[in-house]
Image 1: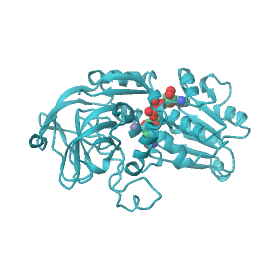
Image 2: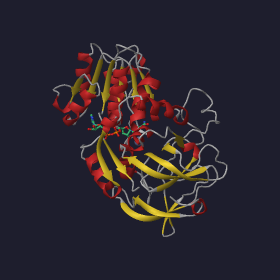
Image 3: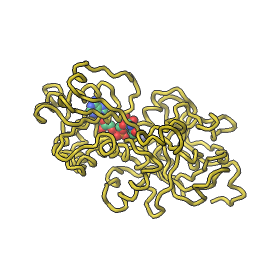
Length: 378
Ligand code: NAD
Ligand code: ZN
């Protein structure tokens, strides 16, 4: 750990840099600026790989860039005007922040902060600059988090202080995927006891939906995935019936309509394929069927659906981070984990050292992992 006089200086550390679309990450020596006004610099402890990192690496044109947005760490230093954090605080990063003052943050109706919401340009919200460079060349951020680095700088509204006794190497998962899935069930859909639920895509996001639906007492939790290797894990998280659409002789929505006697009460799209959003809508019942989309598509963002699906009472609803207001709500989710009311350890299929970060990308591309936790050097 650096002394306080050193802490306001540039840090040179290692980061996994993406130099081009779809390319392997390269571990480079990077310079990390001191935190500016309202910012904090974090020593990243653990960061897990989410599908969104890979989708952005494979599809967006912003390079060189440091990915990573599902992370835990310890505050190394704080910039001016930061009163909420001090050196040594344990934090989770927030890929969508909460300023607590904008019209959305104060509305009681939204978690889409108008000031610190999802950042798409690879820059810091405050000054549209970057805090990383390699030999003087600026490196773009990802979601204003960039946790694939030993140190990162984030806006103080894009981190949340958490219980210091919680294991950072596990709770990093609550900084994105696991929380997003649970929130979609509890905050967005508000799934009722005895409901019929169908989930498309059984990665960590989809299985978090399953876990939350089980906790709500759903009677049917149908899991749909083209990878049959997901079946056993899915059942452990509460999926009552597994369907591989490639092994069905009829369209999957017809199979679901039959086994739910007319359609599911709730469908969740956890793949990132807008074609599956249509299938999810078609799998819901008339009258009140609700489709919640969580997936982030890397191609073809348009959704198409026959108007009659809506005319007959179905609803399509999107959500980011499961509707959680990240700063306000995440500490209680961490506490639920500490009280063993929710499971997250079971999502961690691999633990990797930072040097092996490309192995995590390969495992996810090959469908062989749920979450790989990458442990940064101590
Ligand atoms: P993942 O890759 O671990 O899981 C996706 C699953 O979908 C895999 O099991 C895969 O086999 C399955 N799948 C792929 N194509 C399919 C198809 N055509 N039919 C059925 N199953 C199919 O990903 P993840 O980390 O669980 O993330 C899921 C999605 O959610 C991604 O699009 C990700 O970007 C997005 N996401 C959204 C939020 C949010 O806040 N809205 C948060 C985290 C992740
Ligand atoms: Zn994510």
